[in-house]
Length: 338
Image 1 (cartoon, one colour):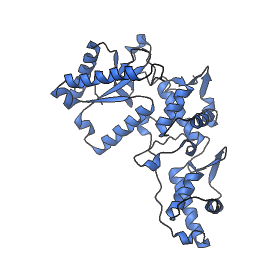
Image 2 (image 1 turned 90 degrees about the vertical axis):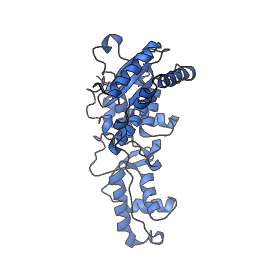
Image 3 (image 1 turned 90 degrees about the horizontal axis):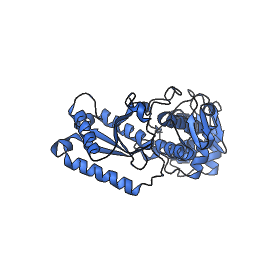
Image 4 (image 1 turned 135 degrees about the horizontal axis):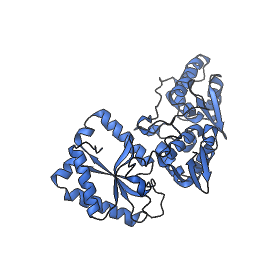
């Protein structure tokens, strides 16, 4: 990140801003809130109410530690989930030859203007110009006071996978294996919950060396499932909840990690988590169209495509549980209630 403390990184950031302004681009520094600011926001010349590109000015020391790298990956993931396209300029490249990074950056901006339709959903809206000098960090903060319970972006956890001991497939249906199966079911639910029945059964089935969850296996695991486990149902999809989570008050959001198994399909995410993600997006952006919200939620949670099915489930999440009292839908626009 660029830091406003007189460091070489901050100085290079200010020079990038000056160079872009000299070339006719409108830019704003440090766009966002304290946890998740974009170093430089370049305004779309075709639509002054939105940003075309976010520019990050990075130094080698910032990324030198494993913790910093993990933090930066999560930060980038969340910003991209909110609709930002990011472009990096390294301070070392800048000091070696400042003209070349600027040339490449301007070329990228011109490419975006030429190839990205102007009517596409903007990442974020700009603040009113007269308020910008007074509150340059207010862009992502407008809804912050409405939903204080949603975790800051820096705290969004990655989806955690369950590691199970291997079982003998020949003993899967034996009565002596039932306590082991019940324990494994509970372990998956406590680790990954709220979690769909399909995922729970898949984890346990694979641990026993069985390739697919057929009707017989499904019936067996339903019979073995401990009765005390909390369940919610959305249409014909059952979700199981860990003992510490109350579906009516749970505020969690999990983002995908490096393992492809942490990427879930839209029907593998509970309405409660979809609603929490929608509230989080609205807290950051202040308001958006329904189509834009669906795209942003899918990006944030790692859903591959914002399909019609995704739109239906996210719309249902907005009228479900605690979210319905917090979200207002007016004339095709969705925002958090005041």
